[in-house]
Length: 329
Image (cartoon, rainbow, N blue to C red; front, side, top):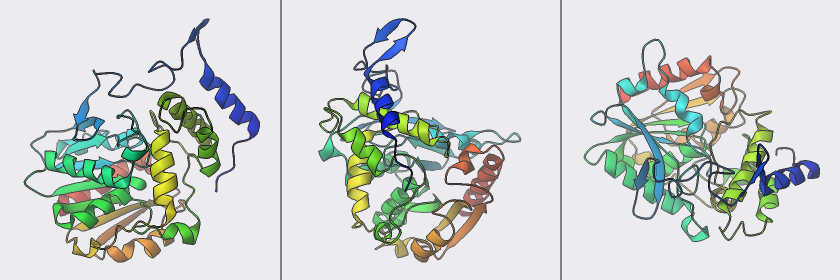
């Protein structure tokens, strides 16, 4: 587990959340945009995907007529900013030259719409992904690319619709079955831990969903602390998504996204860092068995996120994705 936030730091974080100072003028923290970036509901100029039960912030890259690649960020409760380095142009080439990439913030996270407890669960997140796949690839297979929880979310979709996916790029996913939590006690890959989340949950009005800005800001303070160990360039995290989906649903050891993975006839590429706690032995024990048709690449001297943030790794990452998609999609 990560070190706990010391009381002094915790009090400082809560005090900072109470007011913002711009020059000599105090700003109201309850106003959207003062503590954290606005959501698609607060700022109608943001690009938004309107689905049947939510509204998601998204960005696309490339020609919509080309094969789609749906990108799934980690968390639950993070956003896709960390993964945008995939779209860099290296030596004159961009992955968007060959494919149509769709990035989106999952429900309750990033700059997407905020929801209460009843609308935050993996079932509804799967429904959102199903609608996105149907929108961008209605008549053919799709490629999924997911990091951390995003890789697990990709396995959730694969387990439900194994024939809809042609290629899957899984970047250090958690286990396809939740029982891994009981065996390894969770994974420390940076970000809020149980105590952090409970501290934030004690704030008045947070669990009722009446003060998303304050709750999300306090998560941001934790990530700033964790950047001393893990570089995580997120725009805005979603506290209630972390609390209800990550801490409560996924950590109870009961989910199982493996029952139909054997029906997936495409190929999977596992990308991992050799310093990460969910690399090598972890993937071998908990995930490789479900993907006999797989390729694996390990980044040297790399933790959970450095394949995106280390300038030396990004060209290698892009080339790995390019080669895999060209050969299998």
